Length: 195
Length: 295
Image (tube, rainbow over all chains, first blue to last red; front, side):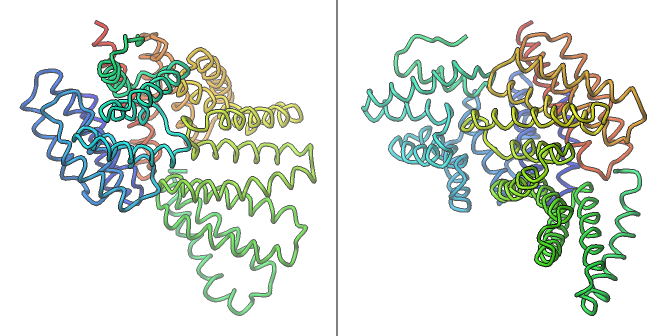
């Protein structure tokens, strides 16, 4: 927690002193949200009340910031922070402003999947896949789950195996990816191959 | 970089303004003046870039490109002008990348690469050209997606290392060439790490660190290079962390953080030290969380 607070201090300096670089806002918000998740994990929920509103209030017109917040709101393991409606609102704003940014379509797809709009999620994620030269497992696991919920089990399994093969070739420590894989395996009734 | 950037920026900007506002409009046909103006725009752009003024850096580079392109219309065969133009495009690429305009960054790097490939065809064994091209290819990898274009990115790293090694075969003691090779090994190591090839990553990162430590110890370096040495320690820490070698990773992160803390405090106006410090602290925080989970 102390290290994360130090990181936030430096991110705030960068954000204030070098406003031209859009990544500083995204970096700052990502660290606010990491601190929120960490405090929650450590049962320090009251302390999490400070960085969370800061993250939500930071630069609402900055697409990269919005994307970080939306992604957090639909992938954070703690269900009390999840807010798929707010995530959809932010992600929609991003794809309207930057329709060629595949990553934003991926976030919108995940958000719409979480909001129960499975058809919309498939459309968004197919767009993400198209714009990102084939996409990656962040698209494919959700495509597997959304197709499954739409009743297309053949397609769902195809997307799942594509994601799983990619992960086997590119082992990842990414916690969100592991979360999505676990969810997909649970939904599709596939025994976990994850380590 | 860092200690005297601001005064140098003032001096170069004043000379550039005199050239731009008073001499060029009247003496626009004077090749010497236009060459000098192009060089000054390049210097001004470099300093703006170091200080994190990316918009001004891009503006100055664009003006430099205009001037060099105009000069090349009159001296189409000039290798020196084409090298300068390639260099200007490469630096435009860096500035676009740093403000996350990745497609503009890619286009700028491609313009530089086309010029350098042509120059290298004309002078195949020129080690400076080999290293310029290697550096530009390496920078191009920073605006490509590892997840969707891994095979293409890997080929670029391979070519980069071949070019660096060819240059070092001609001038084995050249410190700049060794620095470039270390940079290529380091970036290739990070790429292997990103695509889950941890053992290959560790081998490359250790090799890069050995080169850098030797360079660092052999002669006094500009403080700017501390950032690269720190980056090497931080990358090695990430590799060790991914391989479960937490003790070694902690040590590597500590080395990196010590260099970066000093750089950030000594040069607060230069963003890159602080950015690297933040990134390294983030990786260190990740390691702490993983270690706590394992315990």
